Image 1: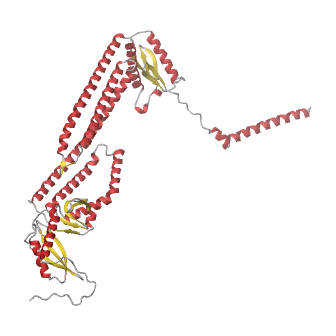
Image 2: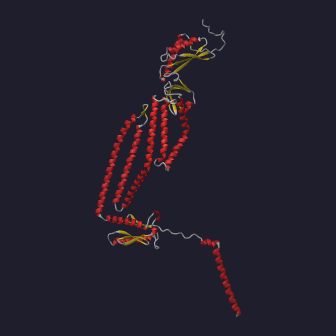
Image 3: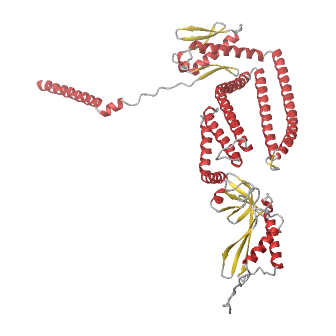
Length: 542
C-alpha cells in the first residue's frame, strides 16, 4: 500500500519537474537573442489602399484615398455611385450642398447624403481642408449634372453645333488671311531687302548675300505663321471641346493650360522688366560714351586736335579699339541683368564661348599685338611702298591681324602681322614727303673712269620722266669687288602714287642703257682667268 502511494508521489514529482524544466527552457528562449530577434522581426507593412475615383460622365467629382470604418476607397466610391444613381432616379432639382460634421464634411444632393470627405482624404501639406475639398467636389458635381442634362437637350445640342460651325468658319478665315498676309509680306520683304542690300557695300563689294538673307527671313516668317496657325487651331479645339458636354472637361483643361502658360510668360516678362531697364540704361550710357569718344577722335582725324602719340593714321584704329572696349565693359556690366543669365543653359553657352576663345586666343592675341605694334610704331602706312622680306609693293591695308601689299605686277599679298613684325621692313616712302625713293645698281669694270659712270647715271636720271630734280639724284659706290665697281643710283619720284614705281624703274633702266650705249661703255663686268701682262690702270686726268 505504501509502495503504491510512494510510486504515485514519485510520478507526480517527476511530472512537476518536467513541467518546470519546459517552462524554464521557454523562458530562456524568450530571453535569448534568437527569440528576441524573432520578436523584433519587421512589423507587418501598413497597407495603403488604392485611391478610387467617383466620376459623372467624363468629369471627376471626388477621389477617395483613405479607409473609413473598415471600408476601402473602392467600397466608398461604389457606395457613393449607388447613392448618386438613387438620388438621380428620384428626380428633384439636383442641387448639391455640403454639411460639416465631427467626422468630416458631407456632400449632399437634394439633401441626401452622397459621401463623406474624411480627414484622410485631404492633403494637409497642400493646405487643403475637408470643407474646401467638399466645396470643390460639390461644384464639380453641379457641373457634371448640368452637362448630363445638356446631353439630353436637343436645343442645346443644336446651339452647340451652330457655335462649332461658326468657330470652324472663323478658323478657316483666319488661316486664309494668314496665308494671304504671308504671301504679301514675302513679296514686300524681297523687294525691300533687294534694294537695301544693293546699297550695303564696302569698297564696292557687297558684304551681304541677298539670297541667303531673304531665305533666312522667309524661314523666320514661315515659323511665325505656323506658330500663329497652330495657336489658332489650339484655341479652336479648346472652344469646340468646351461646347460638347461629354468633352467639356478636356476643353477646360486646354483653356486652363493656355491661360496658365500665358500667365507664366507674363509674370516672367514682368519680372524681367527691371533688369531690362537696367540693361537699357547701361546701353544708353555706353552709346553716349562711344559717341563722345568718336567725336574726339574725329577732331584728331581732321587735324583740329593734336596729341603726341596720336596722328591721323592711328586715330581711326584707336577709336575703334576704344569703342570695342566700351561695349565689352557694358556687356560685362549688363550680363547679370539679362533674362535667364542665371540659368544652367545660359551659363553653359557662356562656358562654351569662353572655351572657344581660350583655344584660339594664343594666335589671335599674338597677331593682334603685332598689329598694334606695327600701328603705333608707324613702321608702315596705307599707300607706302615697302619691302618686307622678299615682298615689295604698295601697302593696301594694315589691319589688326594682317597686312596686305600689292606688288608691281598687280599681285595682292596678305601677310600675318606676326610674320611682318619678325622680318625687316624697308619703307621707301618716308624719306621725301609726297614721293618715294627708288634706286638701281650697275656694275662697271675698273677700266671705266668712275667720274664718267657718275655723269652717265646722273644724266639718265635727269632725262627720265617722273624723277624729281630736287632732291637731285646721286650716285654712290656701294662696293669694290674683285672685277668691278658697284654703282648705286638713288633718286626720288615726282609721283605720289607708289603703284607706278615698277614702271618708273623700268623707264630709268631704259635711259641708263641708252646713255651707256651712246658713250660706248658696255654694262658688262670683266672676269679674269689669268694675270694680265700689265696692270689695267686708268691714267690720271691732266
